[in-house]
Length: 335
Ligand code: UT7
Image (tube, rainbow, N blue to C red; front, side):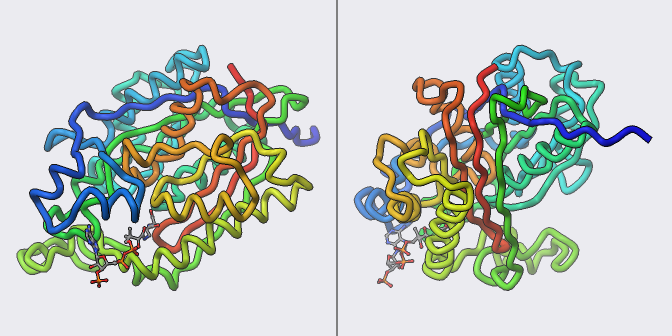
């Protein structure tokens, strides 16, 4: 029997898509008892994008995927596999991966959705990497796409100021080993965190009913202060862990692209490995927390700003409901 070949996987294309409509802090002041100063100081968010009602996650997911494929210089027919991390699929089933496949015409691909909350993108990236490294797939689209406005209660000031809609996508494909590509990943899950951050109804446990709707169980529930403590510890810890495990220090990192949940959580992780602001990608000011879409869309923003170049050392990290958290280390592989 032939020996199994291990390939190297890298990100070779990045895309994003956001709705036009902006929801500013000033507009939120009219909906709930809040103010721009509180939101900016406590979260770093100035505005977020919101879809028109009735727009499923697949819409911006497909657009982000098209931009990522264009960047990578591939066609939809070149894609073997589609993984869609999302907490807001168009429907509970079928997978949004299929709905996006249909929209973009990636007829040769198979795929599925992955639910890893705010860590969904880096969990999906690790899956794509494994498929490519094992030789099962040549090119994988990973598409983080969310319509968080569909599950946000705009009467709850604790949560409605945080979330936004949008999508980010990457192409993960086989690259020459000498270029680096995806070098390492650390991923974690702790189900004891479920009570602090969840959407209680809509699944099999609490099926939709007049009671679940009256109790607002179809919206995000978050005990912010508790999640904040776990998130600071988790993100800072796992970022330091992957850097140190690979014999690096903050000075070696060209770009840190964290999940965008709260500027203060990002700063804590940044301080932990001693990064300057110039080494960190921030998009939370304009997009808010877009859950599984935040890291891939931030990568596209960084690319457009000229901050991602061949050979750059890039660190990704996320923390989210579950609890889920993780980090990824890669050497940038331009298309
Ligand atoms: O993305 C996945 C993971 N999620 C996260 O990482 C989010 C983690 N948590 C957070 O980012 C923060 O906890 C929040 C931004 C959600 C909240 O910030 P905080 O500094 O932890 O505020 P808090 O919940 O401790 O509330 C402080 C005060 C409270 O008033 P009292 O009890 O001190 O009188 C809140 O009622 O701020 C009040 N408050 C607000 N005030 C104005 C809460 N929300 C608002 C608001 N505007 N929107």
